[in-house]
Image (tube, rainbow, N blue to C red; front, side):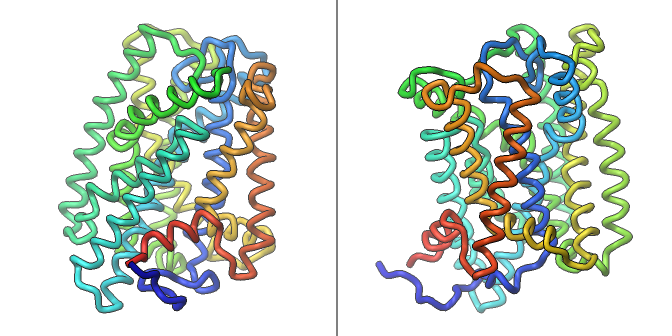
Length: 385
């Protein structure tokens, strides 16, 4: 077995030739992921549908309400859409380089399999709520849709939305019957926490796949065929419609659960579960709207801030894993121990600072042509032969 030569393999784009909008979207998406994950490390509270403390103070409830409305269930679909977008482009570059579809599919499946392995290691060592495994799974099972026509892609996305609602109703009923408490991230015994993280990951990975990833992933393929984010100037009208309609649907669909989880409204079980499902399914529209908004912003003049955020997007896998490293060091009972001493607002503040640190790191190193360590390793494993 030999390693591919130093010249970029088919599908690998030099950092200075990458499209701005997808990288900018990934960089901003990592902020949403950070604040969505940080409160999962807290302990000692009974929590609502989205995992926020029901006994938090006014500031904690305000932060929880904003995140339920604008972040939770919106970051994951955005990431899934960007993943589908990137995977479709990777397949196209393989085919443009003269590879057959069978050869290109092997590369894509190898990459997806390694993503699944990265996700397992991430869960084993750091965080039970890993999302890499779900993307690896969707790449393994649905890569054939890169070659299917638009009608097949849309039909599959609609079927995914139906499955999404069914699964979420089931989870909502479970949450009502057994209120949520501490997660594996809050366990004091590191060995027991490791075991529980892997068990939780094994259940959550196919759930993420079935609930949030499939419809957005397929839309990402559809968008890549039209190069919506690669040529935002030529698609301003389409991106504007997606942004306005998606944001409106997302906010309207998030209000009922926001009122419930912040203890402003206490409806019946049926209405609570319906609000939970509505929040999640409309979050897909929100994720797509965020990607479209970033696409519109990418058409404007570059600034140092945009360049730094795009660098973070180029290092998205590394920065995502670094978030978990920092959160464990700060929140875990066997490390910093802050998870038992702070509330949702403080956790989100720490998440923002963590994200800013990764942006600075990427901004300092990416312009020198250096890929993130995790990206370099995934690339090396993907193109090994």
